[in-house]
Image (cartoon, rainbow, N blue to C red; front, side, top):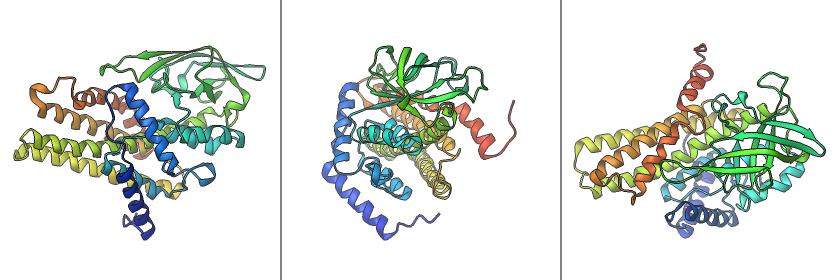
Length: 378
């Protein structure tokens, strides 16, 4: 694809760059709750200026931006070291799923609160015995008057403790094949029958959660697509998730590389050839990630949907982020283990990158089978 920006794309970039310069909210504060509220306020500021869901169609509150403009948007965020909006799962997955598969009433009800961060979304796919093997999920939805009664357990549910709505996948037909009989619901997280238990991570924070559903009610109008079509909808969601994770973390890595360069200078390693060579390799890998992202973008422009190549970007992001944070810890020397540095948190948090959104092992299988067209290993 031609990476030269058109005059219209240059104007878009310059407008965004100027707006970020004038409205940058500053770095995130300390503490998970403070970060959450800081990013919610930031997303609301973005929304008022028309900078949330920019690739969503204009009739649904977006900007109608092209995919290339979305790529420019991501890069400018990295350049400005701006925080991500709080409702990432809603913007990257929930909204697009409702736009592509939802009814007109669902679009009117759910899209605007996603954009302005008044309603936060989470994703209820993984289960204790069905993480990477998603079709093995056991959460059951039974038809009742006016809707469905859902019972089961979800795990690794990011932001479930803050969420208003959950993209919930449950089995509505236990007799069908594993990929059949699944239905995609929008579940109210604030109702009786939904219990959220935080899972404390090595960072000390608890952004992941277990969710226990006991006869939780989902009305018929909150079924996405049709009953039994959950797997088809879920695949769209997962491809958007992996592409979105790669994009969001790709932006974060570019920000962190700038901060790593600052750390190299601050610790007096800016004339150390071994350190500079190592940093250079990381920067080259980040550029490779960026270019692979643009190649995937070219495919989406051609086909209209994200492909399995998003798994490659997500794999690259996980390994690269872990390498960046490991180098920062080494540069800090004896101060590395101290909890008063953002780098310590990032190092610990990076352990999850090769698990969340699909483990690296599963991603390698997807790349081998669906990108390289190799035979299945088993």
